[in-house]
Length: 109
Image 1 (cartoon, rainbow, N blue to C red):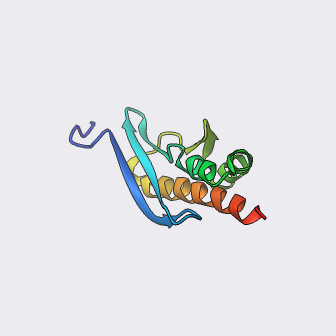
Image 2: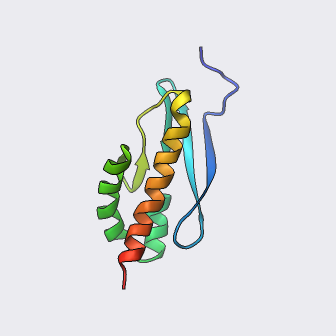
């Protein structure tokens, strides 16, 4: 049974921050198959503001593999997960998004 009182989409702001001090946030979308978590491309947006977008996209693919999630269309995301796995999914997406920006920022002269 689906809980119709649950929001279809919500944003979770984490305690993590990108290299520029901005908080890392993820979006949780509730669907028929479970909950999908995404950074909605915000890590890519931060990297673009810092002038590292191309490097970020290369680093993000490997970072997604490390965290066991996916990267595509400039976003980190999960496949649909059950509600009990939501904290883990949020953690993986948020950390991957932050880590990819951090890796690129540290490699710049």
